[in-house]
Length: 407
Image (cartoon, rainbow, N blue to C red):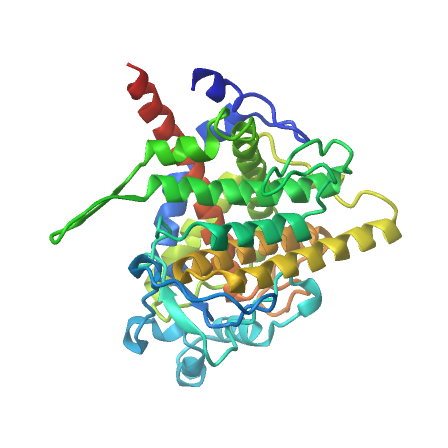
């Protein structure tokens, strides 16, 4: 394993940053602040429709494992300010700028800017879920059904090079791909790696009548990432996790002007808490902006306008297909976190491809900016980055656990 970790170090491909800098910055600066923010009411409640039918095949069945279940919120558990049905009730009690923010949430439905198919905020089957009470962890969902999901994502959507091996070898000889398509491919691989880290770090180690013990499963981690057990792919997958981290971190740095507007509020109906959360949000974004080795997104879609627009549309269509594949996941808890992280990554890409609109955003309370994020996109953006940040933090834990095994 010493040789294995030596390949998850140094400078990353297609960027000027190195793994060690990301580790230090995330674990000391980003992770603590982000976890505090995500525990707030605005970010912990996510509205989602987990009952969409699979659009690609019909022979799937719902997971019967008890840990696959998702517990939705009762109406009384959701803050009044988050429920769309409460807009009229609240309208007489809020200031003009907050009313404007609510109206922006309600009217925002610009499909041309969205990288995902999710319309869960408006679906009558959607329910609020408390993410803190439905954590992402190993549920027992595995085997051919789970492989089919990832195969569909890799084989049908990810600009795959012809040399990709089945069932999964996401980076085999992809040097012939242009930087843009290679970047997209690495994002999906990084997301896959992050999910596998979560499952290995929150594994059901023991269960009896009295309690369940969740924790780090080193063997499961090795099975998914050890260089020998993965035919050399494990270290590449982890490096792609760091690449994904840089992309989402860059999006947070770029979106700062949007959240700095006085008209923007993290509105839950609890004014004191809402104001404190916005301060914490801006503090986190300023920290993100201070990162010294940001990914240079100008390398993406850098050709002539016609080529850039075509490639951008290819990305959108591909990402929307991936979003639809998530509806085929049979484990509801896996589907929940798959939807959230897919939408979060899509929101990050939307930000990076809207740089001019964001930079031109006026810092006034009476002007509606041309660029908008729905509450759903905001919640998914920060929670998705929270998952990536947690994965980077967990790698330090697995390094220590593996080191102790050798002693």
